[in-house]
Length: 256
Image 1 (cartoon, rainbow, N blue to C red):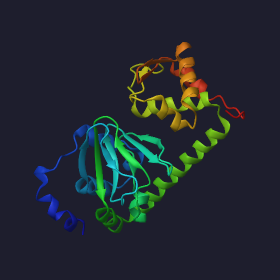
Image 2: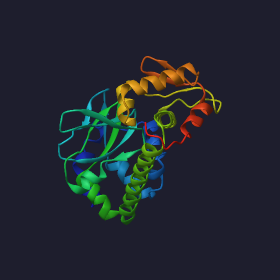
Image 3: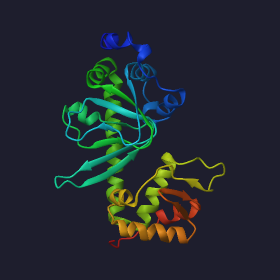
């Protein structure tokens, strides 16, 4: 039973860090997590382990055995992969409420990426033994995980389509909108300015978009001259949301 798995840790509950109300709400707002049954959500919160990381600290390491299924509760997680030649490539940034690692845990294999805290970050993780027990105790959990994997596949297909049909400027605009929605400040008036909410270097944007740093710099400078965005060191502020959305819709079959 699930209670037997948590028996040893519950005795030390007062010594474990807990999620704040804001962190718990951030997880609950995740569309996939919110669709789970109340009893399953309760068990995940009850049996999960809360860990707080300073900026840049390693959460999981590429090549090491995957031991946890986890989600960001506050802050952000940067996923990065090191190629056989030693080049480090940023793959994605994950906001609060997104769950990752289920494929590695089910496969009982090694992590295929590094995960680092981007800013002060809180993570809720579920150990492999608990994860498998949840599958046995909650019949709906397996189908929910299939839904989660299906959503990831659809997102990958959209990314592939963008790479084939959109010029770099449109892909950059879509990436900035993506980050604004997930990490940015919520503007009081729709359509007004808002900060992206992530401190990024142009190399990372280039890796996310499959372009060169020089091309990304040119496109950012163009957007800044047009008054669409403002650049302040590593911070990007969107001044004209409607114009950025229009750029993201510019389809082209021309190759970058």
